[in-house]
Length: 301
Picture 1 (tube, rainbow, N blue to C red):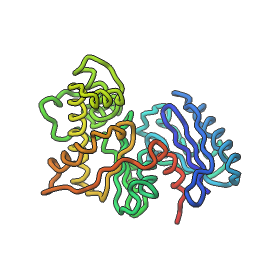
Picture 2 (cartoon, one colour):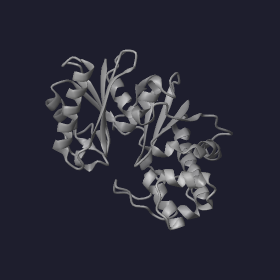
Picture 3 (tube, rainbow, N blue to C red):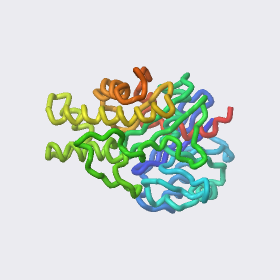
Picture 4 (spheres, one colour):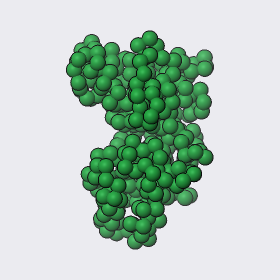
């Protein structure tokens, strides 16, 4: 059995998986917004409840998916958009609270590991997993193993600049990371909604914009078209560097069906190749991929 926790900005989800990857128990609680100590306590309580429901051993380790990453230099959290985590010894504090072994990894890494292990990318050697949600992240799995890199930032394509900007993409958009013009400021859920609001004068969610496009609303159709082109050229820069066997999309924007017909042609137009055949697919496990991937952090086969 494996235990996994997914720490998100609004919820904390826990799952216990059997040896056959079946869900034995699943629980969710709200994330204490902006409160580090309360977050540690909430995770500890959730793990204890989950272990009791699954009849798991008190010594069973737990894997944790989290925003940001642990710095190789300091051992403290860096790059988390849940900023109360930054500068904290999250893994050590959590292990102390749980009294059991803990492994933590970036949420996009856990997503990629889940989909590579038994999801949409199972059977593929080089997998790039993409999160298109409140933020933009990525994870790279090779031969079933996460590649995190010596700086613990492998896959962080969302904080590269938008490639090949056209005339309408010249404005400088500030990013929470302290820089401007990051990919995340263009193709995240909030950025997509903000672009549509600027064009249409109407603030809507990504799902509402997609529904409007399906109903034939011209501005919404143009917004989806622009988003697909932007995602495609951003992914082309990834293909140029690592040329993965498959790209798996997750996060709220991955649910917009119309994007899938737009992304691969846009990759092909911008990649340094005479054509690109890399499959771009939706995640099999949806918003549960993060927590499943966290559980897989302790798969040592």
